[in-house]
Amino acid sequence: MIELASRLNRIVESNTLRMAKLSRELQAQGKDVINLSLGEPDFQTPQHIKDAAKKAIDDGFTFYTPVVGYLDLRQTISEKFKRENGLDYPADQIVVSTGAKQSIINVLLSLLNAGDEVIIPTPFWVSYSEMVKLSEGVPVYVHSNVTQDYKPTVSQIEAAITPKTKAFIFSSPCNPTGSVFTKDELYNIAKMFEKYPNIYIISDEIYEHINFIGKHESIGQFDFIKDRVITINGMSKGFAMTGWRLGYIGAPKIIAQACEKLQGQFTSGANSIAQRAALAALKGSLEPTIEMTKAFHRRRDLVLGLMKEIEGFKLNIPGGAFYVFPDVSSYFGKSDGTTIINNCEDLCMYILHNANVSIVGGDSFGAPECVRFSYATSDEKLVEAIKRIKEVLSKLK
Image (cartoon, rainbow, N blue to C red; front, top):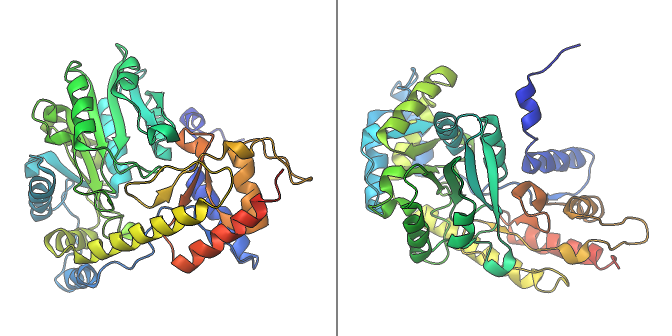
């Protein structure tokens, strides 16, 4: 009998990937499944970025890359941080990785010792908690709900701090809620953490460009806290480059050096062609990104309008990203005469098998009263999906 490592028992499978897998299996059986489970833009990578990748191949960028990333890319990221976010990260404080997901685990493995606590506001992206556990840390959850726009108060966050707290991790715009922290809200959070000099702030800003309420704000912009902020970003969402797997951090130099040391033993440097493509993306026009964001904004309004017709859904108005995250707890305990809906997982499976629409339960995001819909697909599919959902939910009494 093969015995696997006990660390695997600390973590669970990603529910978003599990639901996407189920969707593909049903589609392979001939079912007309509309997949609203994955957070992936349905747009092609802009042409000038693809052209840069083709040129990189012709120019011979086919060798190992520096562990931290090409210098010219890191300099460009440094300029981007300063220009767009008001952040001061020199090139030697930037590490390029194989996706923002690797960037986050690099940081957590660099910071956490066994038993260190990481405060995570809920709802949160599914991998935060599992990455903390994999790093031998302890997730500490701060709960918020739809009436708060899924944003915890400063006093709620501070109440979770203990002598074991090592870090605070959050995203804005947020996956799964689409909530966006304002400059004033971030200032108040930063001002509170100023009192706790041993706590690091990990700010996941991968959705920064998909923002419907104005200028993106970074918590690292405040001088009194910036030396303890690690900013996570990448190419997947804002540039429709999910398959390219390219993320990066700006961090205090000691943390950047630690991430370099770790990455050197895991993956080494990120893909050479993806790095040249990222360079073109960050130096080029943001017009394709702006047009993509306009489409997501339109889809958000379309989805919210349709969902308001579904009895029992409690909704916030997402300020960014491409998700809606309704509270669906009013359906718990209901039945169509055959199936009883006990929780969000039951509701997701009921919708998948009766409406042929794939969504994700909120329990994986720390909000078991909710479900997540991604609207990163066509208007036609969204209209059809919500029509199907409304029809099957009407059978629950």
